[in-house]
Amino acid sequence: MATTYEGITFERLGHASKRLETADGTVIYVDPWGEQLEGEPGDADVVFVTHDDFDHYDPEAIAAVAGDDATVAIYEAVDTSDLSEDVIDLPLEGEVTVDGIDVETVPAYNDPAGGHVDDDGEPFHAEGEVIGLLLDLEGTTVFIPSDTDFLPHHESITADVFVPPIGGHFTMDRREAADFARSVEADLVLPEHYDTFDPIETDADAFAADLEADGIRVDLF
Image (cartoon, rainbow, N blue to C red; front, side, top):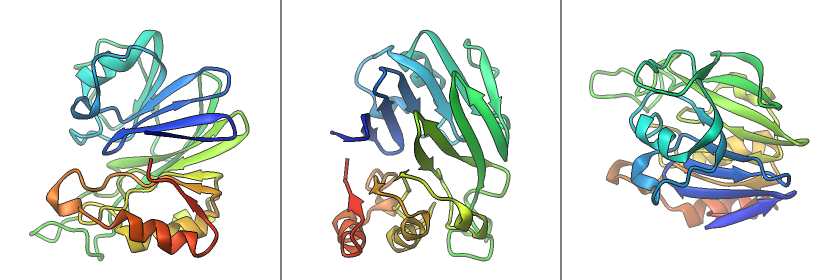
């Protein structure tokens, strides 16, 4: 299922795997995971990876989606020695241009004092392990926070399109994500990272209704 905004097509392949295609035909995948792919599309111009969890960093999936001249950009903390592709390192926090796409990377993690911690009280995603991506696609800004809580440094970020995880447990839940969406002031919200596993089952329709009551467009793409 796909949705469009300002000439950009967004397709949620499943879980946190996404395919974006700009008006000029540039194809971008973010966190492709083989469990969510059909075949080997091989059409990616750019592949982004935000962290090394198995459902986000999958070398076989990267190879399956990458076109012959694809650019692969991965958070620099990920061990990419098992990739045959050349890799552009993405910093924990900073700005970089990848094949003409301006990218701002944003730290993403679970608050150790919050509720998204394991049985030992350790955050599922510790500070320094994950990045979010703020992409500028031909003047349209797309914010993909990845696996994170809604954190104080996020409050300064605005974007046209917002793609938050809403499943809870390992990330923010749908209520936190709704507050985050209001802060981002996005025109379009595309939730992800829910209903794949039992711990992250959630009521996506309730999430959508919550934001739509405030006049924010939500597509369960």
